[in-house]
Amino acid sequence: MASVKNYLLPILGLFLAYYYYSADEEFRPEMLRGKKVIVTGASKGIGKEMAYHLAKMGAHVMVTARSEETLKKVVSHCWEFGAASAHYMAGTMENMTFAEQFVVNAGKLMGGLDMLILNHITEASMEPFSGDIQFVRKSMEVNFLSYVVMTVAALPMLKQSNGSIVVVSSLADTAMRAVAGILNTDASPKEDCALAIIKGGALRQEEVYYDNSVLTTLLLRNPGRKILEVLTLRHYNMDRFIKN
Image 1 (cartoon, rainbow, N blue to C red):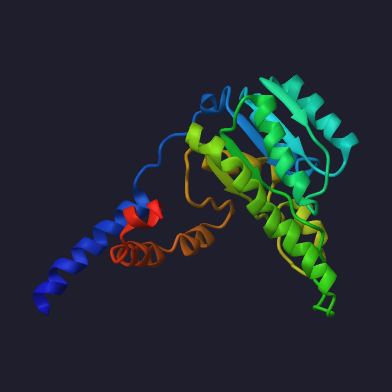
Image 2: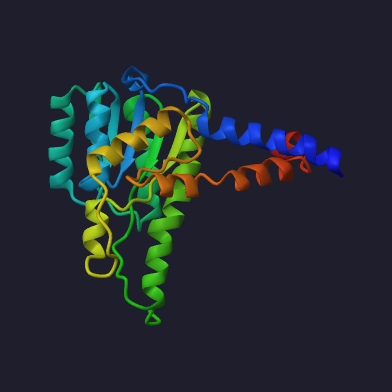
């Protein structure tokens, strides 16, 4: 038992040191030049800022939200910022046909797809559940099912380009206004959050956390979970799993 501990502890120490201190691949804006990117929920907040960052990096940008007038302004600014191309399609993610067709049309307009950024969410209150099943249904359709529909529609193109799927959850200023007086914490700056998300997508990082607190990052990047994943996957025949 003592000999096992003598080997195990150094190995664990090396693993943790590598996990926390190994240098990530450096992000370069030119990584996005010419890339074809979808951004949902792009009429305001983080979604709009991501579209602007991508435009400045020379990407092809396709945005969507419910407000057509706002999207026209976003696309106009994207052209000004240097986007390779910029398009929009207004609609609601309560409509699964729209969700699917938006991705299909985006692929046709841009000639493929390199990154799908899912940033939309339905408006919700922080009040206790009152038994409104229609509200639950709407939330599930917009916040979950539309993500699945869009991902399925995008997968053939993303496989071809070896692209990325990015799912966003934030506490930036727009989201924080919705819970003002209930959640007492400072909003994260939307411009910086948007850039961090794009960097994570370009570098194909599994998870990205943007927070001013070092403690939050350390707690969320839990090495125990990663170790458990590695140990658990040893019991799976991944080749057979993927082929099925």
